[in-house]
Length: 148
Image 1 (cartoon, rainbow, N blue to C red):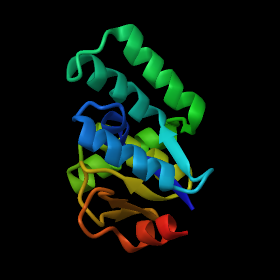
Image 2 (spheres, helix red, strand yellow):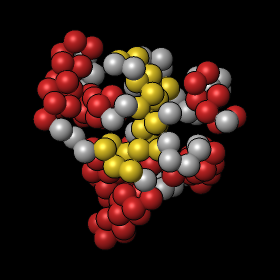
Image 3 (tube, rainbow, N blue to C red):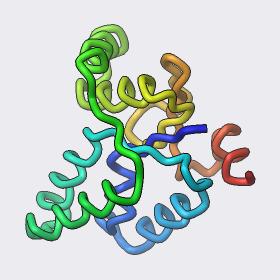
């Protein structure tokens, strides 16, 4: 099963929301089976912005973090078809275009889960279910994957 990570999971793992969330995010990522994690390229761009603007990192340090994530996990490119699908998602479901791009790219890559705090829990589109990995009760698919 492929699992896409949204920007907030990466930002938390980078410590952008404090040490406690960093530890939770890193523990989550470490528990996912090898080879299951993919990163939509959109999340890497957003991560850079979050690290520079919110976490107040210097751009060189934010770039190093982005490159580290890119080197560690498979990256999903954003195709023109994903952009068109993202506009459909934004129009039909009221999602932001950028959240829609992440979800459309995850669907195109055959992901089963998108781990995100930003989107509606349980929203499923083209086989991808959005779930908050930090919720008190994990989504059954995520729970099964983590128990592995």
